[in-house]
View 1 (cartoon, each protein chain N blue to C red):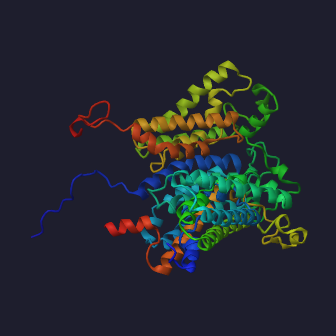
View 2 (view 1 turned 120 degrees about the vertical axis):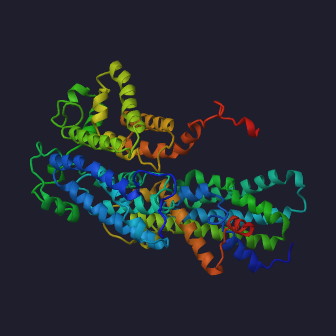
View 3 (view 1 turned 180 degrees about the vertical axis):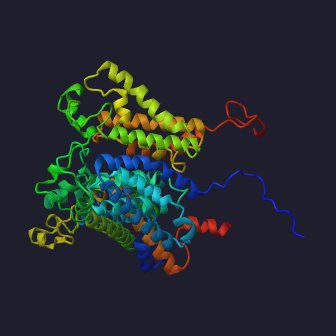
Length: 228
Length: 352
C-alpha cells in the first residue's frame, strides 16, 4: 500500500478526487458558510487542520484498532481534534467563531474526514496520511474560497470583506470593493446562490478536466460509455 | 409517372408547431396588455420590449454555447412568451437590468441549463421573476397607481427615462409616482390590525380586486378563453385554480370577514387570473394527465392562499407555481389514466 508516490496522493486529493467538486462530500458546510471569501477560507483551514491531525492519529493507531470498532474510534479521534480546533478558534478568532457558529463543531460530521480516515489513513503510513489530509483539505479549502468569492462578488460586489476577523486589524484594508455603489444581488448570498455557484464550479471543473484529458472525467459517465 | 403522395398516419387536420402555439398564446395576451397600458401607462410596453430583446439575445447566446442551431429554436417564439409573461410580472418602472437578470435566469438557467424547451422542470418566466423578486426587493416595488388616481401621469418618455437612468422625471421622489399595490395595501393593513372593510375604503380598490387590476384580469381571462377554445390549454388547470381559490377562501371569509378577503377579491387580485390561464398551464413544467392537472391547479391555489394569508410576500402565485412544478412528475405518476383493460389498482396482472 505504500508504493503510491506522494505526488500522486497530492494530486488525487486536491484535484482528481476533490472533495467539494468531484466526490461531493461535506456539502453542508460548503453550501452554508461560503457567503464570503473569509468565511470560506476560515472553515476551509479549520477542516484542513482537522483532516491532517485526524489522518495522522488514525494512521498512527491503525495497528491497534480492531476492525470491528474502527468507526467509533475514528469518530472519537475526529471529535477530539474538532473540539481542540473549536476551542482554539474560540480563544483566538472570536469574531469568526461567532460568524461560523454551529459549523465549526459540525466539522465532525463532514463525511470527507471520516471518509479519508477509513479509505486512506487506516491503511497507509503516517507521512502519506498527512500528505493526503493536507491535499484533501487544500482541495476543499480552495473550493470553499472560490465559492465564497463567487457569492461575495455577485452578492455584495466586494472581496475579502471581514478579513480582519481572520488576520487581525491591519487586514481590514484588504477588503476590495470591486463594484462601488452596488445595490446587491441578494440571491447570491442566500442558499440558492450557494447551489448555483457550486453547480457552476463543478461544471467548470468538468469542462476543464474534459479538455485536459479530452475524455469525460465523471467515472459514472465513463462506465456508461464503456458499456455502450 | 408520379405516384400519388400521401403522408403517413396519423392524418392530422392541421399542423401544430411550437411556433404556432406560442403565437396563439401571444395573441391571447394582447387584450390584457392593452388594458394594462390603458390603466397603468406605457411603462409595461417598454418592459415587454426590453425583456423580449434580452430574451432573444440570451437564447441566441446559450444556443451558441450549447452548439445548437439558431434557426428552429430562436424563431419558435417560446423565448418571447417567457419574456412577455416575465414583463407582465415586474413593475412597469423597474430598472432595465431587472429584465436582463430575470431573462438570464429564465432563459439561461431555468431553460437551457436544463436542456432547452421541453426539458425545463420549472416555468422559466416564474424562475426569472422569483430571482429578481428575492434579489432586488427595492427595485421590485416601483408599482404605479392606476392612471385615474395618479397625480402625475407617466408618459412613454418619462417611462424610458425612469427605466434606463433611474431618475424620477417630476420634481419629487419615488413616493410621488409609485404606489403600493392593492394586495400590498391589504397585507400591511391586516398586519396593522385594520379591518378589510376599512382597508377597502382606499381608492386603490375597485369592485372586487384592485382598481384597474380587476379589469386587466378580465381581459386576461378573455385571452385565456380564446386559448381554451383553440385547445392550446386544457380547462382543468384554470378551473382548478380559480375554483379552489373560491372554495378555500369562502369558509375563511364566512368565519372572519374582517381579516379574510372575500373569495372574488382573491380571484381578481394580483396575478391569479394571469397565472391560471397563462402560467400554470405551461405544458412543459406542469402536469400532463387530466386528473393531475386538477391536482396541480388545486395545489397552486392552496399555496397561493397560504402565502397571501400567512407568508411574507403579498402575492404567492409565482412561488406556488414553482413549488407545484417540482411536484408535477409525482402527481403525474399517481394520476396516470388507466389504460384500457388495465386493472383499477394499476397492476398489470399479466406480467406478474
